[in-house]
Amino acid sequence: MNNAPQSLALALLLSACVQSTPSPATTVADAALRCAPQTVSRLYFGLDSPQGAVSEAAWQAFVAQEIASRLPKGFTLLAARGQWRAGDGTVRSEDSRVLEVVADDSLALRQSLAEIVGRYKQRFAQESVLLTQSSARACR
Image (cartoon, rainbow, N blue to C red; front, side, top):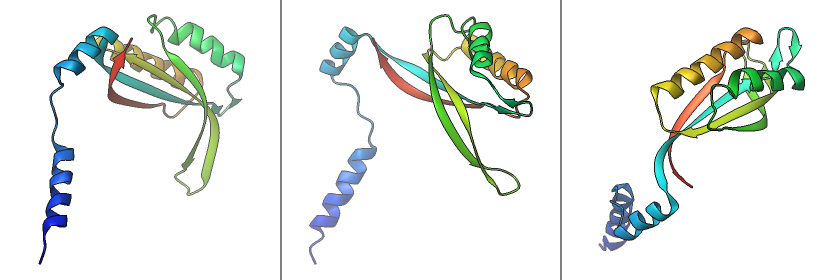
């Protein structure tokens, strides 16, 4: 029995799992592009509230008063539409906004994000604001 195809597949699979160290060329390219490890934080804000939909004017006021002051180095805002299954089994959807921040993971950033979440939940009577974080290599 010829096991060569299986051995090759196993070798390829295992090599995909090995973390390689950056080559000198990659390190030089990263330095030229000013690349560095960063954290990507995304916050998902639903725009439905018990008082009705959060208006564009109310959202923009929240951005100006609560987000911009806490993230002076910058951020990105995206319009989105979210969907989920509620506790009663019904499928619900709503307009939403996604705030994305690429920065060093620091205590100050985590505190700022927590404050933004708390203010949004309080101001618009929200149960939650989803926060996700992932690692990235950011280049300028």
